[in-house]
Length: 156
Image 1: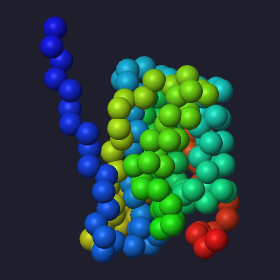
Image 2: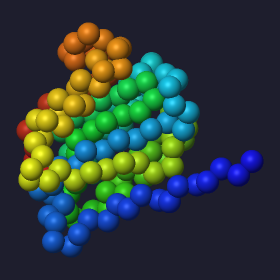
Image 3: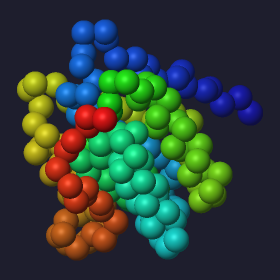
Image 4: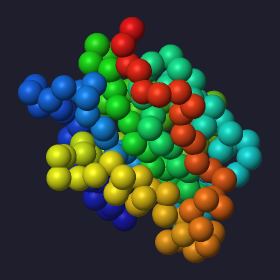
């Protein structure tokens, strides 16, 4: 049976955009949907620790990272002196696939927040995702969420 393959998603950033000052809404999904593969131990801890490690190493600045059963959402910023957003997320997915055994969908979704969009609106959308899925009654009851402890600093 022939199954069409979707095109790769474009991830290029226009030359006039200052990548360091931008915030991206990023989502990655498991190949198999509607099955809990991420919101379980030790996978959730491994994902969170790997995000925090790369945050501390300044590969990216993760404003928020939330794990759902078969996908994750994040708000992230990226330093200007480094590989592209696509390369950073792809390398992280490659590492997590190898070390945590996660079978990811090819590619990921990323959207640069525009001036008309609010970081608060996207944060609320992400934090309410477990409520919309019927997993918890209140966003604060979902345990698979990570925020950085220190304020945003992206200078070397």
